[in-house]
Image 1 (cartoon, one colour):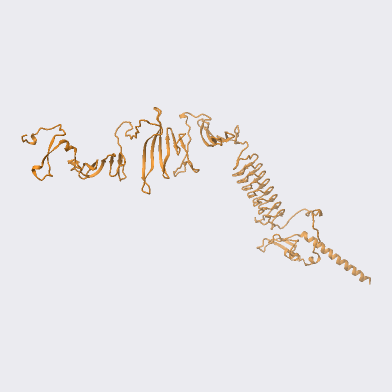
Image 2 (cartoon, one colour; image 1 turned 180 degrees about the vertical axis):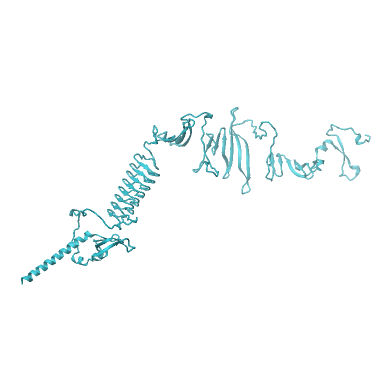
Length: 595
């Protein structure tokens, strides 16, 4: 072939693989050995490995630092400005440096967006779309068809799944396909569905939701909380049950919505039973004069029955067929139990609050008979009167805190603020006046009248607590006691026993120290109270009586008492002894005169 200039050569537009290309092999030392040939196929099939900073195939405009190179065996790398950007491997395509574990694996360390799919279509189509497509030749129910998983490290350095979004086929029937979407989270190391969308229904902790919203929980505390954080006095966290009739007008007696309380019965195959319900209805839809109705229902002998209905301004209770002006009551059941409390009357906050089976009770006043359970025929008037009575019967309390802590005491009668206040189990007591028999607890058969003096001080002449059968009249500040006739005291021998002579007589009387005196206003002052009186000092008589006194009452050592009727027999003995002495002296005088 004759020598020709390169510019004179004919252009080869369709080179063949075997066409030769002259090459100067710079690895040869001798010039005679440097001229060699390379086929066109060899030249474009094999490239040097290159590197990220010097790609094997680069662009001159980028100084050859942007292009392709061999990352490793059978891996193609993409370098941009001498830095690795992506690679194609046998496993797939990777973006960023790392060890790929999927067909498309994106690595990154910044906090900006890593994947953006952008579409500039101006129409109404759904683009850009992301489609997870399981192209199975035999689709079937329960097939998983896609999963978006959220992974992270745990404290042990292990890779863990913390959440995921999964989809599955529920029904693959042509034209009747149903799908399921699960929102899943890890709890205690286990990933499970927490929210499931199943066709039209949504289940929370429920894999087979039966309703548009179905919440299932195994806890016994709050299962649903609606919270409002608005700093405002207006109503917040509202729950609205709205029956719209698809925009049409409501009709009288329309059932708007019902809240059911459902549980199982004890059938061999336990069945669902609505044991109670709250139902709201339209009473009247007339514009400008609308009224509503709410019904409280309970299961009664197998039938869900209305027990309380409020309709407009009227109330019906326990199956009343017609509304009364305020309320119609048929066998009202109240309290902690289920007893019938017909025949009871209660007026005031918490009055008869805990009554269950007690009947014939009447309570008027805040917390009056509040804790009565089974006690019958009690009457309480005034705040906290008979407040703690439980099973006591036939008690009557009138006045705040009267018989306040009585529990099982029976047949007690208290009139006046705090009268018989601390009585618990004492029976058959009668207290009249403010604080009368205030401290009586277990004593029975006591009668107390007027324990409060003119200064409002509690000062009974005797203060029964556990004693029985005491009559206490008045207080220690009384100056005069008036009665039209003398006391008539029973003294029938048939009512007495253990008769014995009175041991005291003239000698005892001769030692008595009658004294004039006045009472003090109180022991801490020297101010007299009332007129001058004649009498004795209890201590003087006690000194004469010794260890077993009769005339002086020492039951309350701080308040010694004098029982004057017991001194009368001593005085009679003294008179009789004196009469004997007189008769003896008379006899001696007769003898002396006769001589």
